Amino acid sequence: MSKIIDGKALSMSIKEDIKDKVSAAVSAGLRRPCLAVLIVGDNPASRSYVKGKVSAAEFVGIDSPLIELPESISNEELLAEVRRLNEDPSVDGILVQLPLPGHIDADAVLDAIAVSKDVDGFNPANVAALWLGRPCFVPCTPRGVISLIESTGVEISGKTAVVVGRSNIVGKPVAKLLLDRNATVTIAHSRTKDLASVTRQADILVAAVGCPGMISADMIKPGAVVIDVGINRTADGRLAGDVDYEGASEVAGYITPVPGGVGPMTIAMLMENTFESYSHSMVAPGLEEMS
Ligand code: NDP
Image: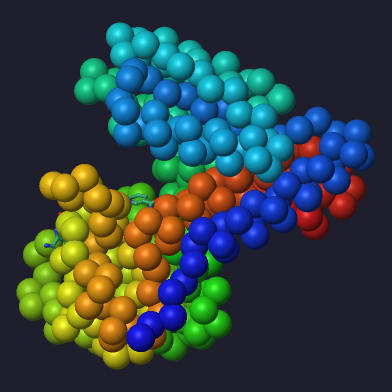
């Protein structure tokens, strides 16, 4: 049986640590960190994601003004809102909840977020910095994936890693972060031939596909670290990952559950990125070391 990588517990210890750091900063007379959260329209899934982020911010002591904008907002109005937050010195991080309505140019909105406040790490300048190995905000889900792998104590360097999925927000940055840690990385996708023969090579397997249960036990190398990024709603209303958890946990060495794996870590990393932005903007003695 595999060891379960408990993302809920790990994310809680990260949040507790940030909470202590925020409380120390506030006790030293500094303002609280601030994450501005923009949501456009009434998408129920987006509302629920935003609720999770705002309540995590409350827990750690980060101010998180929720800016609710109507579905009918124009591109220009939304860009103006982003620019206003860019210029507000009390705002450390700006999060625009995706997806945006179809009439909005989402790329233009993400591009407009100041790089220094881009705590989601989606601005092209941040993406370029990540690929060039320069200081940047590491996108939250990929950062969470790496923390989960590192929490097992399994050495990444020299291992064979396979990432299934090549999206800009998960697959590609996860692959880059694994490469930075000296794994030998393969990125698989929908055109990969004989996916099982590729995934069976993996000492570290990350599934970020969006297809419930598609990674079956026979696709996993015995003892592998398996990280399941997928969040899928099944026909009977359950949440399911991309990995067939029951079967896979008989083969893998370590495995993340869904829910309770990558999801809570994504939110913890958003808090971490916001606190880092705050530390840089406050340039207060001691704060840099705390981040
Ligand atoms: P995308 O739809 O953007 O990308 C999915 C990727 O999977 C694509 O690269 C696609 O390949 C690949 N793919 C699709 N079908 C197959 C297949 N049969 N075999 C191999 N590869 C396949 O999804 P995201 O990266 O945004 O999200 C992936 C999953 O992770 C989703 O379930 C999402 O809900 C979840 N997620 C979870 C987060 C969390 O916090 N836990 C955060 C973000 C996402 P191709 O490029 O060829 O089309």
